[in-house]
Structures are given as C-alpha cells and as structure tokens.
Length: 159
Image (cartoon, helix red, strand yellow):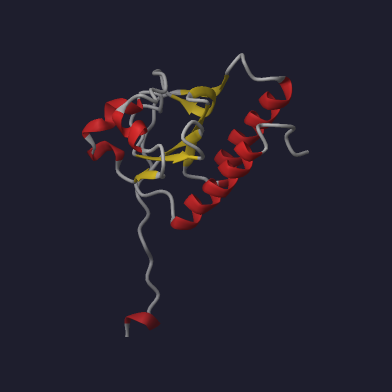
C-alpha cells in the first residue's frame, strides 16, 4: 500500500525577493531592549530557513525589523492587521490576496506571511521566501518565542 512507499514531497519554489538586508529599530528602545530585539530577530530568521524577515510592534508601534526589509512601513491600521488583533493569521499564499498592498513593509514578492499578535497591542509579522513555508510546528515555535519575547518586556537578551 501507499503507507509502505517512500513518498518524496515537493517543496514550494523559493521566490526571488527584493529588499535590503538589515536591521531597523525604534529609537525608543533602551540598550537592553535593542539587544533583545536584535537577538529575537536573528533567532527566528536563523532557526527557520524559509523565514526572511521579522517585524515586531509594541503598543501598536513598530519597534524592530530584521532580515530582508521592504521599502514600505508597517501599517497596523490596514484591515488585515486590524482583523489579526486577537488571533494569528497565516497567509500561505500572499500573492493570491487582494490585500497584498498592505504588506509593503515586507520584501517585494514575499509569497507567505504570518501575523502573530501576542496581545491586542503587541505582536510580530514573519515573512517567508516560499508559499506554504511554515509548518504547524514552525508556527507553534514562533508563537512560543513571541510570547516569551513580549512577556519579558524586551529585557536583557539571553547570553
């Protein structure tokens, strides 16, 4: 039967993304918060190979962007973000959505994204370089990581 055969799944093709690699942080962050935010962005991007960018907000204001950055700003008043205040929204095929224009903060041609609120005013946006790039396990890991990040109020980064 099929259960005894080796089945090789095809992964989605990696998109050619356009953006600038870097880190952008709010001037309102303390030195300790800056270290923790930079550590958080690097940890998520490094741990999940298909993740290309992480953007976080606190008190409905962007506090950091890490990875491959888009040209636009994060618009938390856009309908997609307003709808994601209470529960996560995974967009495995972002290109198919009319709301794609709401994601100008991400690299151009980003095929998938995850909006993960930690509270009504805090959360993260994760961009991926392929459609359906995040597994349920990846999303659960990002959720735990984001909760930990914001529950510690962006204090000292782990060493």
